[in-house]
Image 1 (tube, rainbow, N blue to C red):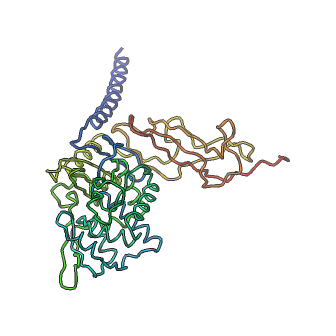
Image 2 (cartoon, rainbow, N blue to C red; image 1 turned 90 degrees about the horizontal axis):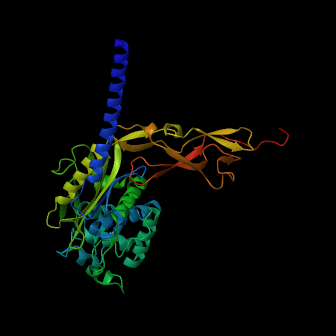
Image 3 (cartoon, rainbow, N blue to C red; image 1 turned 180 degrees about the horizontal axis):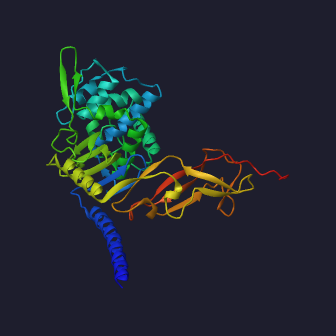
Length: 417
């Protein structure tokens, strides 16, 4: 009898422990879902996987002001990678750009007409103090006109996964504020419009394809040489960089860009390392009269995400529920082939949950699967992509699609065998 009571007590304790873990995971996830930011839109995304950890009106198109310059920098980075521009190349400033750079309505460092500035210096001033004249100078050097540069911006945006943003200029000002460099036939009031998700995708593209961009955006202060006699010490206006009052407590922010107009409000797109993972954060449309609000709301979002979720490493398909590391092969010299992830991924899961509690669904590639869709056709080469795994780490958030590759060579079965 005593032994039986002890067994019942042990069973009850185990049940309570399991229930507590489930409840803790549910409560933490609910808290993240219920967090409401004082902003028009927001999102947090894992930079490697694209996993969305938080979103609020994330698909609504909104004015983003100078956050546009993240896309402008991505175009310049592409030009440099393609050999069309170089960091040390000097760009001569014309009178129109010089006039923009001294307009007190805009964010700027002064650019002297006829003077030459390196591409790096112009990019630094564009990203560190949001210099509008510098963005204009870069765009004209890259494409010759605002309209031509807009096409390059649209092309890079598509590479990042953004297809329907409204792009009128390289700065984020209204079309009319660009004066003669504005787009003809477009309303003077027109401003670039992106969703929070658009900005996250563009930022993810920038920091993964051109990680050197962070060397510019993380600099706290840089000397800008206006001419041979005058220089200006640029202090980074990103209030979330280390040693700033709004720097996050549990992680380090090292980019990207603020933006502010009457239409856009105060906006901030950030990136940094949290829980050893690079995240992209976007907060759009905070109170125009409170500059620190954009940073405070970003911190609120990060705290909600970190309080609810934790990254867990996914090494192989069989780590997920219902999946194995093998797929059957049709007419091959072997009956099955080993498969694996194209690259190890980290999935953010509700705290208290484990990777083997998450279900995965394997879909074989159209060109490699049989009519029944459950076998692979031969030949197969080691390392070639043969399908993808659909997984939903966080209930209510979009699913991820992770590429799967063959880990073996498989040749066709001989008719003689």
